[in-house]
Length: 203
Image (cartoon, rainbow, N blue to C red; front, side, top):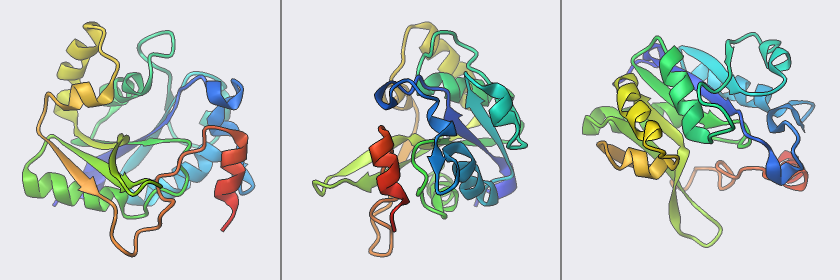
């Protein structure tokens, strides 16, 4: 098994928030606190350390008490830019990625991704969840990565690659279903609008 102390978590909060009217999504209110802070509190017990990837309002994110790093690639290059930034800063053997807009993600996310990666000797473990249509779909922004993949990701992004799935397909990846009967159905629901965020606040 991979020890939690060997995993660094990154909260991806570097997007434009386009579908939320251009606001900084991670700083929107969720149950009385900034969304990214709620995400941090859920992730912190699962890993050795946490950092935040953000491109705006850095001092606000720094007030959460963990390191904050903007994208190493300019112009809001998407989630993979956050992956790359975190892999460059990561001091542990593994990195787990979590977006700031999915605040109900599983409390055993890292444990189950780690178990699958260890059992399969995989380079990447990626979560999958059932969506409203009943289909099991991968959730590529919830991935556990070997830190040694940094060089591969640099090459991929230098080639103009931006899609997570296209990059992970180059490596041994295990998909981890989060569809047990006890798994909360809304664990991977993400908030793209303020209305969807308020909906997630409801029990």
